[in-house]
Image (tube, rainbow, N blue to C red):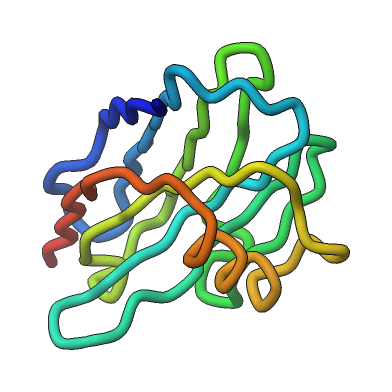
Length: 130
């Protein structure tokens, strides 16, 4: 059984930075996919950044140049460094991991893959204010 430990998040002014982290304890697969997703109030959950075991990454356009996804294969941990935060970055952020990977590591392919097969965190609130 996989246990997810989340940390980070909170409130920050626009232009500030935050770091989100998840540790997936008990996950034993060597080939895996990971991702960060965001759900703003009243909106559907959307993919923000994804990464596979080999380090291939893909970002949503809204995250490019500001967010950096990283992982630790041994610790089975996942992080998201968020810089120059904007008001529209406010929302609940979810981390996810799944065994295996789609052929391509993209938001478009990883989102349904993780949604169907992944283990998800409970969510981390991020609030950006002016």
